[in-house]
Amino acid sequence: DTEVTQTPKHLVMGMTNKKSLKCEQHMGHRAMYWYKQKAKKPPELMFVYSYEKLSINESVPSRFSPECPNSSLLNLHLHALQPEDSALYLCASSHGGGGSNQPQHFGDGTRLSIL
Amino acid sequence: GDSVTQMEGPVTLSEEAFLTINCTYTATGYPSLFWYVQYPGEGLQLLLKATKADDKGSNKGFEATYRKETTSFHLEKGSVQVSDSAVYFCALWDNDYKLSFGAGTTVTVRA
Image 1 (cartoon, chains in turn blue, cyan):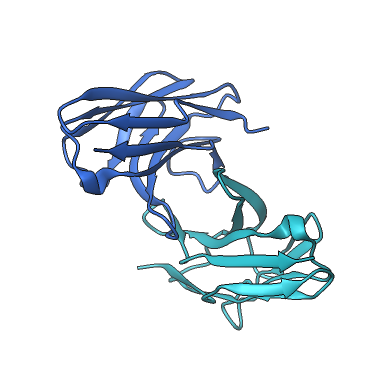
Image 2 (cartoon, rainbow over the protein chains, first blue to last red):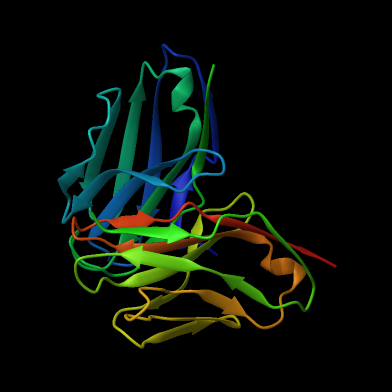
């Protein structure tokens, strides 16, 4: 059983829709991450939150908007996405802040399809 | 920057065969090293880790030793099972405070 819970598991949306991906962890981790993973590729880092503050944005387009309402929750707001944004979106968390080398715990991801 | 190079797959084995997946790294210091596994339809799971030279990580019959002299962290398992079929990623904690992943190796174990 994964300790990082992501919802929804699957999402299909049109290019004009607005939707949100949600991630929750109750391990007391203070760093949370969003990754994008295309088929047969490694995950690509998008955002890092450390102690609920955005610490890394890997030059992600503004149609992706992260939010960290509290230490257990992480959201990714989606708007006006493109077909090439179709991918598996993974959330992860780790002990300590975003600069720590502690192992990251991943959720099972949200599989996003853009029509 | 720091990076890992991982043996390309796919790798197909019979049950009870020996598995080795090569991983070498390039880094200015001595980064922490990890192996993650991704089963079909799931996220990544930490398989094992090592934080300094000569450390051996082990879990579920898998082992990897942090070799500073060869800058390697090869993954091994003595007798694989069908349930080991997955994608395996080598990763390091780089000097930009991020996980840097290898390309991934797809392993298929036949009964």
